[in-house]
Length: 83
View (cartoon, rainbow, N blue to C red):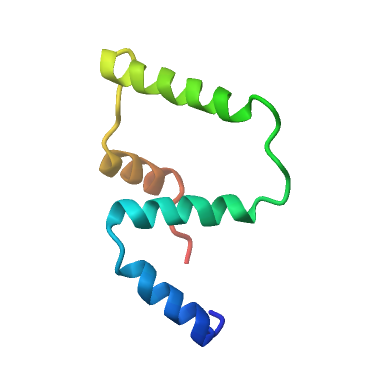
């Protein structure tokens, strides 16, 4: 991993002192700043609608959730480590 400059270390130290919510907001803004292209019109709204639809399906029971441990176990069976 690349060496951090003193400036980056200072910013990181201050960021880690923030609340979880504030760190999440900071992460969102930093990720957005990495986007080289402006979002196309309607993309944000389309994703918001899709997320709402999926959450509604989970809450209503229409979509069935699979425990993470089960997913990892099935993936390990399907893609065994070939070391």
